[in-house]
Amino acid sequence: MHTQYRQGKEEGLAEGEAIGLAKGETKGIRQMLQNMQEMGMDITTMAKIAKLSEVEVTNILQE
Image (cartoon, rainbow, N blue to C red; front, side, top):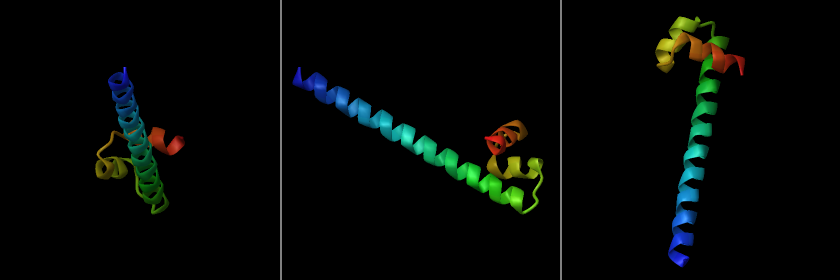
């Protein structure tokens, strides 16, 4: 039973770390896109730089 507890705890920690990294990455991408928008870049250029679709860029900027 102790082994199952430890395994579950390790899996939970790994999942939490992955979620935290994903949130941080999303926040960084949003900030980068906002900076580019403030510089007057168009959506097409922003999408190419960020390696995202124009729809994804638009959705991120509207969040």
